[in-house]
Amino acid sequence: MTDPIVIVGGGAVGSAVAYFLMADPAHDAPVIVIERDPTYARASSALSASSIRQQFSTPINIALSSFGIAFLRDVGELLMIEGERPDVGLREPGYLFLASRAGLPALESNHRVQRAHGADVALLDPDVLRRRFPWLATDGIAGGSIGLSGEGWFDGYALLQALKRKARALGAEYCKATAIALERAGDRIDTVSLDDGSRLACRAVVNAAGPWAERVAALAGIALPVRARRRSVFGFACHDELPGCPLVIDPSGVWFRPEGARFIGGVAPSADQDPDEDPDAGSLEPEHRLFDDIVWPALAARVPAFETIKPLRAWAGYYEHNTLDQNGIVGRHPTVRNFIFANGFSGHGIQQAPAVGRAVAELILHGAYRSLDLTPLGFERILAGAPLRELNIV
Ligand SMILES: Cc1cc2nc3c(=O)[nH]c(=O)nc-3n(C[C@H](O)[C@H](O)[C@H](O)COP(=O)(O)OP(=O)(O)OC[C@H]3O[C@@H](n4cnc5c(N)ncnc54)[C@H](O)[C@@H]3O)c2cc1C
Image (cartoon, rainbow, N blue to C red; front, side, top):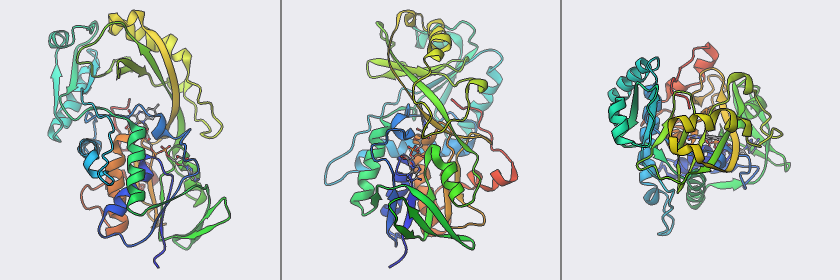
């Protein structure tokens, strides 16, 4: 019997890897997903704002999300089990990035990259913005970039569960345990030890541990620059409807979008408010101060109807923040060849989970990327200190 492929972490990324491994006719080894908390209480995939966009500044991220939206549109068919089609509630009203005069050149430059790589996006001047979104105040706005298709939001937890169920239906095994040691034999990992005392010989190990990825890499003696950073999401209700409301990103960094009949929004904390946290012990209490001091004032300035909103439930989760360049780290370790990263997505990981899952499965089963070359996201750039900068981080 071939040794199993072991995936540490059964969130959206680990479950996507498991699904694509099992769905590939070339799969020839058992797949075991080690997940210590099947309730996913602190997992990013359960606490995500679960939105998807094509508006990135790097071609590789556009390509990842392009596959992501195609996968989400077909998810009912792809992840169907015995005639039961999962529903991840995909909505596609677009993202609207707003720019001040100072931000306009960057918006236009990103637009050129996005168009060149097939994204369905349009630039709108303030007059067009006002006509299209009469509820929007365009003070200080020099232009906006809207996704005409392929952008919106979905239920990330439902996606995680659908991937997991399908992976299991195809034969993947989920094991409730914590991976506590990775034993190296020369240039490979040959055993994964679990907290229940068991030891698994392995053909390959995939690090899909989300905000805990740095710790899992450290078990193999590998330094991974991925830190847990808390992000808060604030729910609120508004009396008025905002017809056609997309996910709006204000030049201040404040974002909002509809969530059913209500709204959610947030902002990235500034660097000095944004310490690395302990993803086990750190607080998952949302930073309410951010809402009062930054988010609400910006919302009310951008959408007059938001002056009288009613705050609702807020929550927080951890970005798995890649401190080098806020982009995913995917692929084999250059010397420990059977240790494979699927980490560091820094706030765009749930939309990238399908494409990353497919890529990692190809790497393991076929020895190379086949459909989308993720070499630019490789760990080599971390060792070289050569960032692949993504300018559109939300
Ligand atoms: C507030 C917020 C908003 C976000 N918004 C978006 C968005 O709009 N769009 C987007 O694309 N992305 C967004 N993200 C990011 C996205 O949610 C994550 O990138 C993605 O969910 C990461 O998935 P994952 O499977 O890698 O991690 P997780 O879902 O965190 O899964 C990792 C799993 O590994 C397990 N684990 C860890 N260590 C071990 C171990 N040693 N042994 C066993 N199990 C272990 C954990 O229990 C956990 O379940 C957001 C994140 C947050 C927090």
